[in-house]
Image (cartoon, rainbow, N blue to C red; front, side):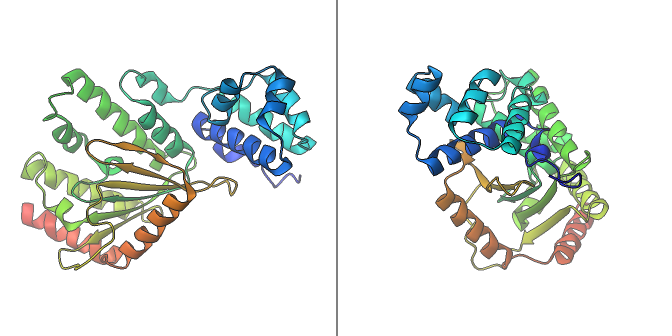
Length: 296
């Protein structure tokens, strides 16, 4: 490997969630490629079948000793062995979001962990400004009416949401393409003043981060769109070509990461089709400024 070529796992070391995912993915792919049965692995390493299932599903991280034995069994070359050991070390770290373990369920922690190692997020919101672009007051207005969330939890959830936004300004800033409905520019979440501040915040972010933030509005005049009827949809892409695009969907009652390739492909195709029904980035920004003036 040349000095100019980083190790394949290097781009994800900032996220233990992505590191654990890549490690499990590469072990599973190598096992499948060689046709090694699970029984062979469990017998060689002294594992139960349930324990190995937890390893392949990222719920457990192997000890260094067990990983070394497994890499020998699965015939990894020396270069890949070093990469997998580095991934294991990264996977053992704790992301900042784990401090909110009692507040965030496993699905949300996984989402944030994937964002931490992502290169690009494409998202869709039908009625709201996306969470990664929300102001504190706007986010509070969304959360406060929920009787199931205590005030102290609202404050903590807002801290998490604002912390997630730091991905736009870190060493390897996240890129985002957001499709929103024109309804999101008009729904007066928190009242006219809160909405106006939110839209100004959004416009400022677009103008200051035009190289990594694109917002496209589906106007009321659009007659059809495959995303109509959806709530929150994300497509998360990574700098490492080994890692496939994953999805995230969220409704009132369900949410979770989608890794099944067929489902992700369908979401990607629907998203691409939806882009054809949006205003251009410049037209979307102009509509945003027009809406701000209406709220003055």
